[in-house]
Image (cartoon, rainbow, N blue to C red; front, side, top):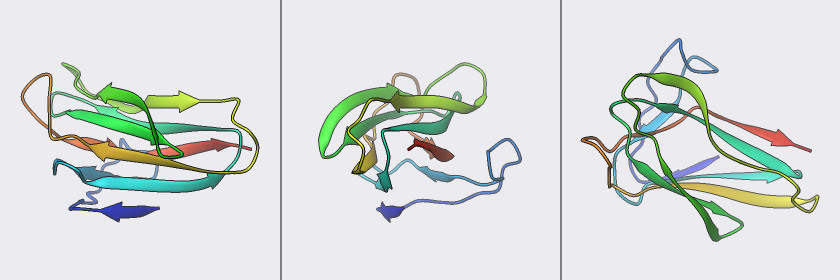
Length: 114
């Protein structure tokens, strides 16, 4: 994975590997290059959550609100399947906007279907 902008990597036992990537900086991105026919972004919903954009192969495919009134670790934030087999990219972009009162985006893990 590659990151642009400012991200932090705190430990949290509720996350898949015990740590995740978090940012509240507008336009910060994380990009996963993968080979497969599907992918899921696993994140974290909570009262700190902001809004992210999801790009698949350079095309905006979803806008995701990660706000929730209570914590929802390891939540599937975006999933797609049925892609042509082969190389793809999935990019998560922090918008710096919110539907509530915070702007954080958490990237916990990605699940790739081959």
